[in-house]
Length: 280
Image (cartoon, one colour):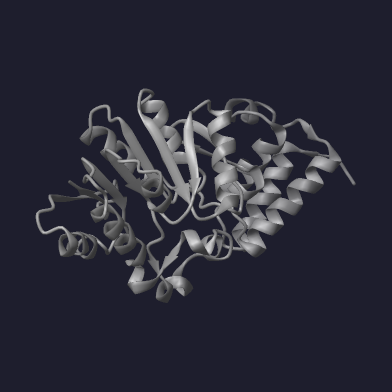
């Protein structure tokens, strides 16, 4: 195989991705990862030659992304969240920027709590971030998937965040241990199955289905959590949900159905879409 420069590899990827109606910047992200360089270093090495085996792998990755929609994060196995690098794979939902806004809302709403629970933790980004931001708090995180919990545990060790992980359905393992949370945070599955065909290939074919979809028009997980919260010996100071952009009325209504005295606030994300529900 002939040698190629970084610039030639970039130009090929740009053209190939454009033909397949994919974002052209993906080529740069994948190539930078393979070369193990930052953005400035990458720009300075445009005339450098790429090792043939590295170029061959780069071509394979670009083709797989373009033709099958495989997410960039599933090649690189990492994502930046709250200015920290987390490991991800196909067993967990790739964290979105909206979830950073969920965490910021919680941090702005509550002073240092004693006990925090993250329900449906996935890669662990919420629990781990809150532990780093609230080092004195005891942080628990639950998930039904043992595979997801393995990813979360790896991230907690990598980032030296002491989070206690439990396998189970939302609050079930927490109540079994008679733990009373001050704060509950959750980004549960909330996409209705009816919307599946409208999602991008990158999401619907590669993110784990159990982390995306919920029955009852996307509200089933919220109702389960709300019922579990109402069965606690003491109501938390705050329960915070990430929601779908069109659930800004349905989720608060569901909360008030079970807790008539609830104080509920809906917060919009940076795109001015309903995204966060705070329940006190």
